[in-house]
Image (cartoon, rainbow, N blue to C red):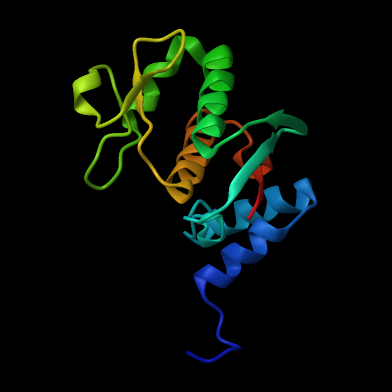
Length: 151
């Protein structure tokens, strides 16, 4: 592969590095129009520790990647409790991420305020992708979601 060659990975990395929220939203919309999903695993998350995350202009504390997912779920439940069952449509290629039955998941945890369990045995890349997919599914600004991490 040529260094100057444009790849989807390079385009998504440009998107991830954008700091201006309006530009990021516009760029994500343009990517979706050409069938490029900006929600992809971020290889830079492997081996990182979490300080917290930013979403819709607010800073949230979090101590781990799974804590980020818990808090994203809490935000969604608070706003969309009446349609939280939509979350059951988010699945992996082989595994369920959400279920009403704890025995469907390897390491389940109940989403507070619901009868739905979520999978907690995932790596940082999968958790970040799942958070973005959840936000997008509920029509929230997933482009404003960013994990603060350090090595």
